[in-house]
Length: 601
Image (cartoon, one colour):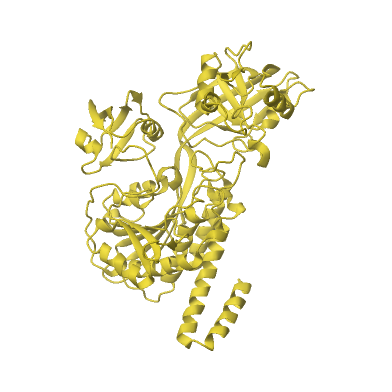
């Protein structure tokens, strides 16, 4: 920080000759704020934080950093004397043991050496191992890794992707056969009892960590073979001494002829299950006491601090190589803005008004898990929570083509009287054009609070070409714009702490958000860790579910003929549907099953 202070001091000296001391002091304050935020967002988007993925050590490092800042700022610990509110989400856990022809035993460690896939699977298998190439059987081009290969009651080891994957105009049949699900279904059809996936050479170029899909269901309803991803080195170890995996891949690519084989003398013992407590996560909570007649009420200022880690199903990157998705804007920027707001409010002597709770959520990228956990297990009573202010992706402010002003997007102004006017006043003062959505149900953590009938405001600067890609880096953050968003947010939150408690207003219609072309059912799922089915927390007024007679507290157990055991099954079934089509939805209402026809929108 010394370098920053020296630069700031020189800037102030240069300004004094042409500005008043008040203006120079303001410039100093702004430069100092930008320096603080640059430090925060640069750390959160650093390689050390590994993209803050759900199962990375980097997410813990980021959480520890936020907690340390809360303590340094002077916030009180928000959960049982600590800054961390622990919870867990459903994920796959397992064990994998390899035994060799010389009696050797290799026990692999989950995480660095192998990772179970995260769909519905439970069981154990001990079986001989066979190498089945890429695990494909195609007619265009003619290629069959299972030709003349006996895999019945065996565990197959297969490479990810396909031969010649990087070549243009790859045949459609081969492309569709490359998915985990397609390979698992084919292995089951051939009689295998399990599948171990290893990275192909191109995917492994930037590091051969096993792909981590333990937290993401790949299911399309029902269960699949036991399966996991595994490091290439273990397959190399099991090949005949004269063979190397990299050489086999080159031969297959060159000739388009399979090189499948038994891995003589090698067996695997694979055990996998999905558990509700499979993946431990943490929210980070600190607070400032209020004072005066409103001191016992709460304003929540939130931002999620997780991102995609090394990619995964939500990545929009076209590259195959393992790469950190730094998440500087999504949501290093919102977390940084929340930290700066905490500093500012903590510095106010004898601050009047409601308690301020600063809440950094995890699990947002996986489905708002952290905020859903908080609203179902609140530290401060929800009935005394007056409003929630959410910051997500506030670092890429750009000009509006029509007005020439910086465009800021907001959601939730319709959830309480006066919110629209407060936002418009702030935008006018700080030079923003607003793109506004009245609904408080959108693709970020404010939706969890809105679902509990708490008024919300969400601010963000929109998606961009780096969204969910490794190129979302700290050097692209618009610090000046983010600082103005914090300035405006500070004034709005101050008003929230002192105004009459706003009454919640239910807003009809869906919120805008990240681009989506899929159909809408119009429900708010409840706890994602429910044991069976998807419990409905609420339905959108006038939405497809409400029109069909679906109600809050119903539990969806089947859709479009597919079983729905959890939120992942629900999302998978919805992904296969089209707008304006009618599907059957079976729900449990108490102990009674009801079959309802829903026209999707």
